[in-house]
Length: 459
Image (cartoon, rainbow, N blue to C red; front, side, top):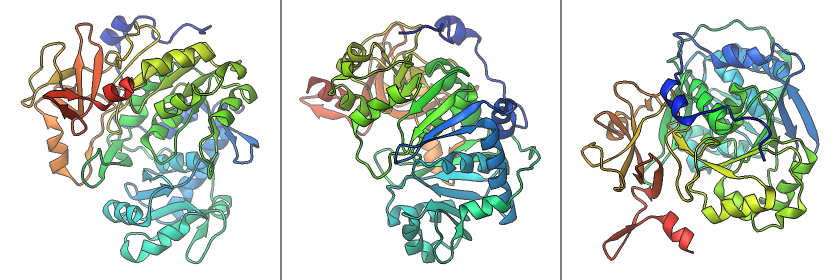
């Protein structure tokens, strides 16, 4: 149940008036994060280790530690724009390393620890990363492919160093926590995530110092409904774009603290996760639909959610039955969101919009959406087609810059004034989106086109 009014009071009015201003020069770590660090006691991260021990970090501490890491990079000779490949589990160092890359104007390239040696070789090779940061458990994978990755000059390990590696903490201890604003352009490259859709080799999605950092004001303010008093928990691996979405930029834009549980090496245990709500004052929560489906199989009423006020889910459609079961067990609705690695929140269900079971909701503020045909022409309401985001004459702030070093793929996903998401959907007369599936994921049956979500809901 909600005891605080929503950040978005009126959906239509917000969409009509909302604008994000993009300065010519902008560095989110200095210009946004450090604003919250002016209060020396303000909590930024409540991190719980794999053995259940909590550790608290203030914005001030993370500001200092991330400046140290930026100076570590400078000491290694890393120039602005160079790529830093980061493959770590949910250790607190991941947050200060990504912040440090921002400060140094280096381009962070997060990757999941699930990557194979072949995956790592491909990513290091095509991104030409000069620095690799990983942990003891994964360093061997990098060592195996190092001979095929000539761009890699420095290897940093969180933990004990093997041959050719430098240990993270001693480097940090020697580095200064003083650093001046780099005065970088807001359009400079900031972060690369690899995405493959369901076909072909993974593409490099390039975000700027404006796109994710400023665009995720939309995600944090209107969808997560975050404010400075919140403790927000996102269940996501650090290697996925969801971590940058709702476990970095979006909550921290709003001054909320992050809750992170380093449950590495364990199979996801819904019961253990649900117990966290009684142990820690978590107020807002993101989980992928897969996790919610596991949660609702638990006897939810035996768990306590004393501080929880707002829940969201994204990554795929959340079945209406799961939303109803979660609400029955916890008292909280699951607000759905839609977006991609290439974007910030593009559509969603919000506290101030009516819920239509099965719909992804209307467009998020700052976005104009349509269903278009193969020529980029808008289709009538109710007809299925390609879900598109309007990028001409004005590109939404949160949209990626390009598929880096792949102009063909960048051109292919643009059709006239539209960016084509690769998802099939329809839009009803109220502007609500109804997801069908990936364009390459649709099943043909007796001439009817059926999306996997429809199949799953029927099952």
